Amino acid sequence: VLELKASSVDSKFSTTTQVYVFPRYFDTAWVLTSFVPSYSDLDTVLITSNMIANFCCKPAGWVQTKSIHISCPKESTSSKFLAPYTTFSRIHTKSITCLDISSGGGLGVSSSTDGTMKIWQASNGELRRVLEGHVFDVNCCRFFPSGLVVLSGGMDAQLKIWSAEDAGCVVTFKGHKGGILDTAIVDRGRNVVSGSRDGTARLWDCGRSACLGVLADCGSSINGVAVGAADNSINLGSPEQMPSEREVGTEAKMLLLAREDKKLQCLGLQSRQPVFLFIGSDAFNCCTFLSGFLLLAGTQDGNIYQLDVRSPRAPVQIIHRSGAPVLSLLSFRDGFIASQGDGSCFIVQQDLDYVIELTGADCDPVYKVATWEKQIYACCRDSLVRRYQLSDL
Image (tube, rainbow, N blue to C red; front, top):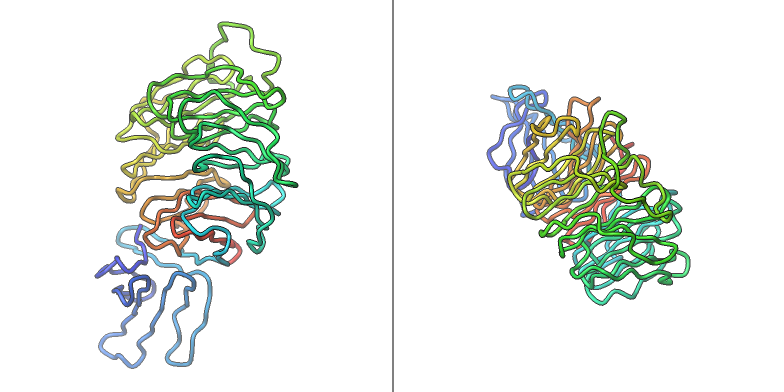
């Protein structure tokens, strides 16, 4: 896949004619289509962080749009570049490490290295609440399915539940001995899962603020966790002990752990029995389920592994676009959204013969992506939240 960036010098693209890319400013590129030998009809496209303009017809003027389609027939590859519909710049002042959108699409929540976690209006970025209580940085935050409650995990080794209505902290879980790096919500939210730098994944009872058990003790930092319903053909094993009556919705579920020691671990959420252990090329940063048997996991060296739980020894495919760390993966429609440490953020869908590139981050890492209907939200090291409209395609 070819990217339109200032760094993409001397690359050749093909639309209806040859297109040449070379740097103009540090975050801007000029794209020229040349009609050789006559230069009187030279068309110009200016691509910036906030606007993508269409090819103009002679000097008549610009026709502005939010997307542009670039293809390279020789390589059988094609990309559609989508500019942000709007950008929120007043939510945080420093790098935004995580975000999520409520189930109704009305609210967003985000955490930042400026030491804050905030709830804001998803339509315009207007601040609604500030959630204060973690001692150090907040690594992860997400809404419960109700959209009225927020779950967060921080470097203070605490897991907290907040009211989105009054910003009150209603529950604090303690038990981890290292920072919490990721969380997952089981079904409607009676139970939640956390993964920590202390190498353990734990299951928590939200009603009683208690730990229901250590699901895994890896001896290596758990960077990402995911919970998914298992296909009937997958053997999850049987629990050695009768599960607690406080466990709700854990049956027929898989737990996926992205580990720092280059291992991707899958186990039965209720049984705690191993399903598979896969060794990758580098530390696993993130993971997600695509279906009851397909999953994705991203590594520090830029690999995205697609695995089939029924035969996990050999990957279904390995996607490698660059050596930049894969920072987030999100199941989306019949494909997925991925973001990397070089600022790239892209959508892959089975029914499309092109990749959708979400522009604007330039070379700043995109840490997390969230969606609601046809809207996509991405948070970045540059302290901005970008909202994309797929209808602009």
